[in-house]
Image (cartoon, rainbow, N blue to C red; front, side, top):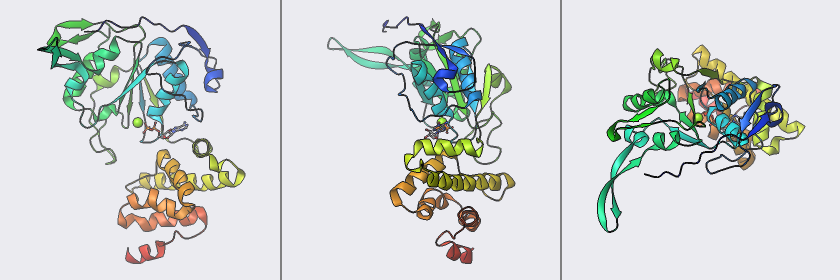
Amino acid sequence: MTNDVPLTRPDVRLEAREVFGIDSNLVVSGFAEPAEHVPEIDEAYRFNPDVTSALLAGFTHNRRVLVQGLHGTGKSTHIEQVAARLNWPCVRVNLDGQLSRLDLVGRDAVVLREGRQVTEFQEGIVPWALRRPVALVLDEYDAGRPDVMFVIQRLLERDGKFTLMDQNRVLRPHPSFRLFATANTVGLGNLNGMYHGAQRLNHAQIDRWDIVASLNHLPAPEEIEIVRSRVTSFADDAGREQVAAMVALAQLTRKGFEAGDLSTLMSPRTVITWAENVDIFGDTALAFRLSFLNKCDDAERPLVAEYFQRCFGRELDGSRALAATA
Ligand SMILES: Nc1ncnc2c1ncn2[C@@H]1O[C@H](COP(=O)(O)OP(=O)(O)O)[C@@H](O)[C@H]1O
Ligand SMILES: [Mg+2]
């Protein structure tokens, strides 16, 4: 077992207004120098004031923050970009899919020591992070399997101590260890059919998070600027107009989803991908078909084509043929 744990504590105070460009008088803690695992700064990132304030409270005052919101709204990258500005090491672990309890906690492994095979405990991500000045982000928190959630539950105990049961050891968290999570739902499960695999979380589990921030769809002007910050070829006035039409279309799909007319919606991530594809193909309609339309149910495509027509004042090529077969 290694004992190379850095004793680093935050050593600078930063003004949120200056660092994040948000209207706030918060003064927050950070590190003067970047270290391993500090995410790279994305200069184009635009901080949402509410979410940023919640995350900063998490870092500065050691609050556990859960960020909830629809897919592709910037939950994971928001945490990463705040950490990047604070020079705070940050590690993301995705709880969905294949992750098991042993990946989190650790397992015995056979290793070679001086020519002999010995069994050694190889620590998992939780004990590794807990002993370091690291922000651990539990991504897709609501998709964790029951055995994984059992481990997380222990991590969330009030005093933050963590027992490695198989090892008979109790770990005390590093004073600069931080815990964040992102989730698509607030623990109600897959209510609208969009988040297959989302688990219902019990209240005790949600209750252990000190702050729940919500990051759903932003006002159109904000989303337009996010897209333009990502895809720089839309920086001029014509570009703004075009992105405004794209975001308007995305908003129609979100309304259509809410009304039950569509089973898919266009996330901000998809709008960005669409804009990138416009760059590649030089054709808004083709890029739209490839980025979104082809992900939609056949029966819903004529409606999506109609949204396109409304936002761009022209037919989405092929939409007549689609409508005819619908
Ligand atoms: N505020 C923002 N400024 C710049 N880019 C953003 C912003 N929010 C989201 N993005 C971009 O949108 C995409 C989706 O973000 P992500 O954090 O993966 O979403 P989520 O975790 O909510 O599914 C990423 O490419 C991200 O860089
Ligand atoms: Mg995410």
